[in-house]
Length: 282
Image 1 (cartoon, rainbow, N blue to C red):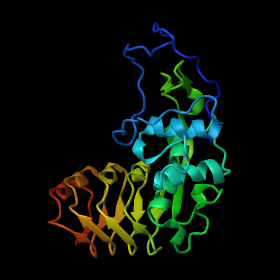
Image 2: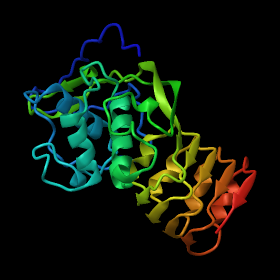
Image 3: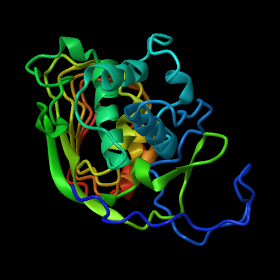
Image 4: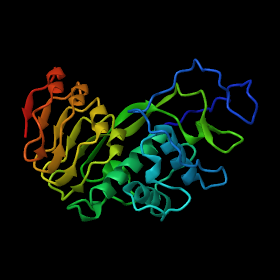
């Protein structure tokens, strides 16, 4: 990947060093894939190691995870998939994370690991490279494509005097990175509920999770995968209603939902899908 050649200097502010300015900025920033969950988790101190700072900045910047599901102060405090993903990335993973790592790549790796721990990853079949210190783009079932994405790094974030990371007004830079575009894990013994962190994969065109043991409801965040073209969820144990928000997946072409325990009829939102070719329902 190509990091920005020169980090711009911090924009001047009329606010004191003790508090951020309330003055609005006219410099655009890149929004996250979906409305972020406000973070109440403590931000990493500048004295913390660089990997912790990168991951703290990633979760704060993206809003990808509910802050009640993870903790940086005690790695053993919570038994959540999110905490397990952080623990792996901080204690067991040797893939480079530093001040030049685009936060979108840190978010991608964290979200894949959250998916792994949410869906019984240690019992998956034929996926030995997952949860190892290898490029996630080489993991079984994962396809990545060079994609133009936001170039925000820890180096383009600034620590205020309170120690909380705040965004510089610099996020008009982009970089070409290998981004997940296909997730194909059919018949791999996946079990559990699809995590909210699925929203991290906004460039995914194919999500194939059929013939597994998926349970629970579809997370609302799945309807924010605007580039999704093929969604195969048949032969699981998914329940609840399929939201009308499925109509937001405007690039969707093929959907398979049969072999689940969905309630109600097919949502009216399907009528908004102009590219749809095939829908195989309950």
